[in-house]
Amino acid sequence: MSRHLLQIEGMYPPAIAEMLDLAESYVLLNRSGKTQRDLLRGRTLINLFFEDSTRTRTSFELAGKRLGADVINMSVASSSVNKGETLLDTAATLNAMHCDLLVIRHGESGAPALLAQKVDASVINAGDGTHEHPTQALLDALTIRRRKGRLEGLTIAICGDVLHSRVARSNIHLLTTLGSRVRVVGPPTLIPTEAARLGVEVFHDMREGLQGADIVMMLRLQKERMTRGLVPSAREFFRFYGLDAEKLAYAKPDALVMHPGPMNRGVEIASAVADDPVRSLIREQVEMGVAVRMAVLDILARRNRPNV
Ligand code: ASP
Image (spheres, rainbow, N blue to C red):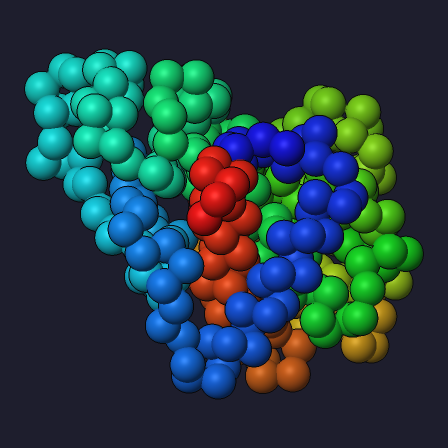
């Protein structure tokens, strides 16, 4: 068992189930209001975010605090990274501070894995480039499992900018490992060439791709990662690939809608769908994010120091 959480790819079903099951108990605990635990008392968690984040960073902070850890948010803008310190120098510095859990988000795919080789802490990937975002996939799976009672056999359509999405990649690995039927839906320019190798079905038409889906997972159009014009305009994109009530009607009547945030309303999703209290799981995803991150911190802290 690894003391790090770097990616979903290669994880076995029991390891994923262990995290989801423990997260389930943290959902109940969080809802009960009795959240303060001392499981991680005396342990230090450092949040090291080289890219923007609202949900992920806040929920790791909350998760660490609820388990009793000392949580430090290292702001990259005010750190020596801006003075040219390399990632490995930063790692050596953090190591000397004896941090136990290191949560990192970085624009380069593979940065957390590199760091993991250099520090004694457990490293948790909070999103690296276009590679993976493992805790997002875990929280998505927990959200679906709680609502649908299972993951196996469900048809899940992941739609939009799949090419640049680490959320899509982690979800594809997790959902196919646990037996869901996964489709990716988007314009040919935004579907990675390796999609078929990942065991998913590829669609370029929303109506076909959504036909009979149990879950419709929308992705943000990641303009910041586009090096060339891959979509004509936001308006055109919405017309063909934006989720509105008319396109959602092709999915199952009880299909549920997800989005990892941040949302571009009117670009990949219509506000009426995003805010639909019956069909949209977007708020619930955020709630599950805290529980999943508590479970991940709990499990990794035990693995890194078994007598805790
Ligand atoms: N928040 C997610 C991520 O960091 C999704 C997104 O940014 O579109 O990958």
